[in-house]
Image (cartoon, rainbow, N blue to C red; front, side, top):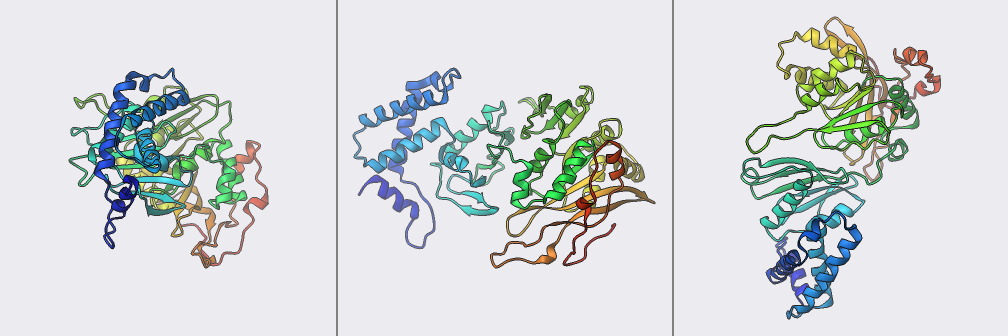
Length: 454
């Protein structure tokens, strides 16, 4: 029986076991050849003068030479599997390399050496990919983290990083990860999504897309809110693409994800503390510094702390057209969360003063929701109208119609509909020469009435 067949049977496990185990014989050979290649190629692997094709060719040549010296009886399938595994380890990211290259996969979740899940079309499913052991997984994590100048060890067992294509990476190792290490990669499309893509996906419709484009060009301040994995960063990236090419844009992120194609973009990302616990640069530090860089627009990847106060102040002091995201489940929750984040700045500010700042700074909230069918939709485009007493008044301009029900496949039939309300800032846009026709706000019949100021 070939090693490949044995490996397949061992991975399947005994009948009814449902477990996945690897063949130690094949793993030992893979490890041996891997170390042989590292010894033979050495610095060539990190020589940036070599093109990716040249490096891949040299690795494959050495792989075939090393396999030819092995006396173990290997079938053609065994050899192909071994070459693929070692090549992925050296040139890519090991067993998950093929998943990262799969355009249908949007997230890769490694729950330990023997458990890898992916997200496809909004649904989570388990894969057959496995690592040899914890050390194998740890080497891949170290490789990813080291590429962007970050580190992960027992002193700092948590790390946020990114892949060269901008995909977001989170890693957790011992002693925090029980049964780990854990690795989560939020993949980004090789081709950044454009507004036409979001319309095709059903995230929004042409009328609301035209409306949002007018808001960005008209330099209104927008908050994109939603839960984890709802598509906030993708939407922020699409909205940022509407910024005119002659403006100076400063982006601030934990790990660089935004892919702006304007000519005048300055991107900054945070820095974690060094091994002595010093030298940390936070989002808040970068937002404050960005104000001294003469920006026309400030785009903050996400407000999750005291930087919310600095962002509101920037929006209120001449940096119109700024954009950011916030974790929240509804437009009303977005304001409550921003209020909490401002208090985290460490200043004992009256609640009314904070709300007045928010009412004055924020023009529009774009709410994203991940529905049960796995799709990501914009469910509210809401105008922030001002203060009435101690309450900030909101008005939905576009609203998702849940009342249209679901089809036989469980997909929502509803879509984003205009409520018929013309926002107050439409006059401001008209003064700037941006005219939105009545057809943009043409009301549609809702299956279940959910419109009105709240």
